[in-house]
Image (cartoon, rainbow, N blue to C red; front, top):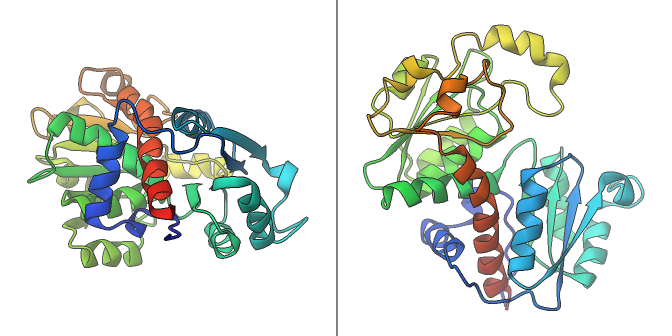
Amino acid sequence: MTLRHFLDVDDLSSAELAATLDLAEQADPPRVLAGRGVALLFEKPSLRTRNATEMAVVQLGGHPVSLRAEEVDVDVREPAADAARVLSRYHAAIGARVFEHAKLERMAAGSSVPVVNLLSEDAHPCQALADLLTLRQGWRSFAGRSVAWIGDGNNVCRSLVLAAALAGVAVRVATPAGFALPKPVVRRARHLGGDVLVTNRPEEAAEGADAVATDVWASMGQEAEADRRKLAFAGFGVDEALMARAAPEAVFLHCLPAHRGDEVSADVIDGPRSVVWQQAENRMHATRGLLLFLMRAHE
């Protein structure tokens, strides 16, 4: 029995990532969680993550138990490791959507079952799995493909860059000054064999790309910075002119929620090249594949 956690995408190898995506596409997955629970802790509100993860657990025969931050109050009422020790006595796995990535690490240190990162300030690996699943469904193969990221070098961007490196997809990241993809993430991706270009020019990143991805300019918890960020990100919106620089069959990705008129124009996100709704659905399928992979490793 091997205990595996999933705190960021590169907790999987390239082969394991491919296997997880294969498992995500199983139409009738085995009910490996029958009679078992999965604890889901949410320090941040969620639409896609909660629904996708709860339904992934149900589809594997399990019972999701969602907990709000105030119900557990990790590291206030009791240390993160202790909370995980308790939850792992009841459940087959623990998922947590937190502000502080180190809290996930402390939970993993105390848990005797897999801990899954449902989002932290450092990473959003389940989103990256859904992104790759969506792209693979359209492309069938990652060979020779490239993705452009336009906007903030945030947690969503970081996990996508690492996932792309594992999958052999080139990434072109365009961010405004002061919002760059962290250099340690670039080094990690390149160590994995990733082809990563970092630039401050959206046009350079989008040129010839097979997919163009973005996210909101001010994420949850950054609302007070929204006006400042809107000024800093001027010129980094994905519109038809920018999409025209991408490959003719390029698709548009967004993890949602979206702010039309800011990071993306309405004609792009609601247009024929947008795959954002398929991408949102794939959060459920990708999480189901991940849980199936982790349960098999933990048998």
